[in-house]
Length: 379
Image (cartoon, rainbow, N blue to C red; front, side, top):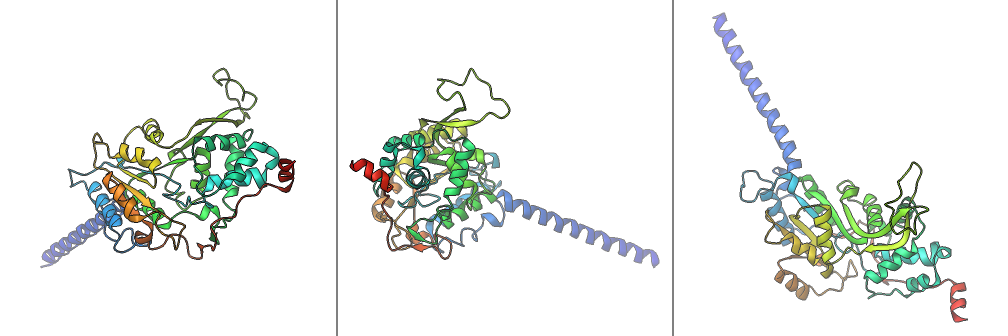
């Protein structure tokens, strides 16, 4: 009888141990799934905090993530090392409507108010002439490069960070660094937690973009070397006028400085080229907001991509919470015809900015030259 009791006791202990092991394995698997994309993060509860409940693009993204992170879905599964998502920054992750376009306003403030003594009269005139409807083209980018000539990369980075603390007049209670769209921040975090590598591919200069991202709500999801932007020329101090720095070697204490030279604007076809050269493979997700992003979109959904891929275009159609003026019907039809999924800021975003930030009564205050500059020009 005692032997039977001991045997039964041993069996019960064995069953309990098995249950404990199975439970622990389940917890571990669930935890891993949350990071790797086959668990709750890939489910229907994602993208619900700042996205509208009936958002079609949000549901499409949930469906895409669910299938490409499911190892059992052999037709669609994408290994974690190949889950590359690329985002344009200005107008896609953050506001780019004038008076809130970060790098443009930084140029204006630097030339006219913060350091007018460092720039030429020509650059001050350019800064003062910028109005809504201006073109952020290569010509303007070359002027940006000239303005910061002589600054070390570290000084330039710090200035970009400090500028972010200034307030824009286009919104109430908004610093420039606060202009990230909450739904897009939520999306970046969602993809990151499902094993995606996040890259920011911006027309804004690279160091500026790094400073912005590193101090933004997406700072924990984007590595500095995952920021790809427009490039200004940088050389060793003392050798700025040399055609090449190939004949010099960096030594302890040397400084890297901006020469005022310009290398390349990261827009249009250059975006596809930069992605290929710096990432080395096609993304499987891409997000943009304008024609200058279409090359990156097309590169992503190129028929030679070995994995399923999707691309999304943000339409600035919200004139109540934002300064959007784009026509949804026309823009969405154009993007859909190109194979892109359009996202409506008006309808798909349940919220855009943090609580307390609201649209101002007026969009912008025109830049003005300092009084002495106005007098000099009049003379």
